[in-house]
Image (tube, rainbow, N blue to C red; front, side, top):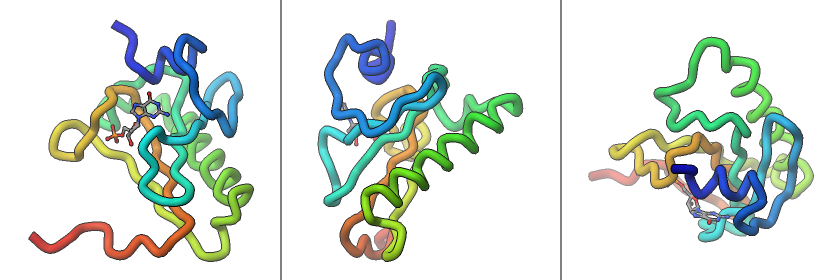
Length: 115
Ligand code: DGP
């Protein structure tokens, strides 16, 4: 069963793309948590961070380079931003296709709230 993100990559569902090549795509999150909220995604369907293989190291590095470039394009580089990967249930992962959240455009505060 293809995930939502596989359907977006295949063009079966619409998305607001900000970057696309044969290995990595990026599009705006449907529920933005800040003025800029982009998801950077490998075309290869890696379900979670726990499924990353040693051979994926270059691909994962490429995702971060794409996120850096988008952050610059979106005017976030000077003030900064947050990159997040949620993993499985305790990490709050909803879509089982690895994705790097690029979030910025306002002060984001502390990442974890005290319990
Ligand atoms: P996570 O909780 O880390 O798995 O984040 C999933 C994100 O995906 C969440 O911020 C909302 C976003 N999202 C879910 N469905 C869609 C969709 O159909 N289109 C877009 N653009 N984003 C989606």
